Amino acid sequence: MNILHAIETSGPGGAENFMLRLVQSQKAEGHQCRVLVIKPGWLTKQLERLGIDYDLIPLPRSLSPQWMLQVRQLLRLHNIQVVHSNEFAMNMHLALVAKSLGIPHIATVHGKNYYTEKTVRRFFMRLTARLSTLVAVSHDIKSFLATDAGIPESRVVVIENGIEVLSYTPDPAVRERYRSELGVADDECMILAVGNLYPVKGHTHLIDAAVRLSRGGAKIKVFIAGRGKEEQSLQSKIDSLGLTGQCSLLGFRDDARELLWACDIFAMPSLSEGLPLSILESLAAQRPVVASAVGGIPQVLSDGETGLLVPAGDPRALAGALEKLIVDASLRQALAKHGLALLAERYDATVMARRYAELYRRQV
Image 1: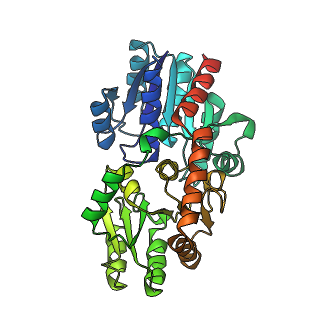
Image 2: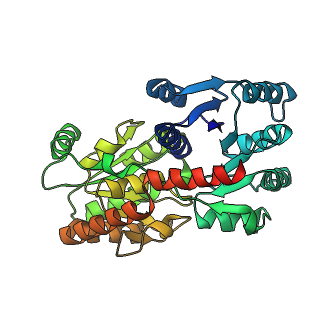
Image 3: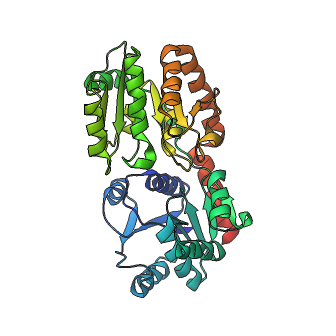
């Protein structure tokens, strides 16, 4: 099958990594895949590294007739049989282009973002749902599309994200080396958070929790990997609270897997999420997770069984859950064991790819 994938962002982020994984799985199954992007960046570098064909067609403005004509020509040139896009702008544009050629279009929605903030956006979300097959990466997002965008639930399919579980099997030698490089002592508990430095990711609450833990005598090192507009304010907060020795911003890292192996606990204090790949990666790396009970997270983590859930925006509860894991190694091991079993059953990349393949075949 000839498949065109499209995305408006250049990464790094969850949607971009999702698409890369899906394309790799489909290529391994013998499908012909190429990717449409509208700007260069991290994603195009990854596509080049992986040997995935891509087309860069800058989008000058929304609903550009010239851009849509170029994409029509691209679809015809490569005899594309299925178009699969991600996020709002590409979902909207590709729904129109694919419909004009009678090509099936799959539109994946990864989060809530700003889809329904304006009437015009709600209109185009509903239009996309009528012209395309809309896929939500969690049941929470499906409910959001129904209640906030007015899209009938019957128009939305849920396909949960997946990862290559075996590729995250921990390497003890790498763990030891990374902890040494990061300055984490054997008797210190390393807490890791990974995500863009935006307010919605709730990193400020993790810093507040770190203050509580540190003042309570916990031997911890907290690392936050990611980049974004909150970097300066987060660093100022760390400095003002006297946490320079316990809390560090790592900036953008392309070695999240190795950082997971090095850590003891993964924290996700987000205020809103879809189905975060970083939680799946943490479970695959056999690391216990403390996360906010928002979005699709409770569908993955059962509190006390495959992770610990806390209310969003509550540093006290977050610190309490982290402390519970810091002092109880057996609980950490139990959560990791159950989380890994869950992944193998529901969230392996092959399961995700198979479900999309079945969806494609029903449309062609």
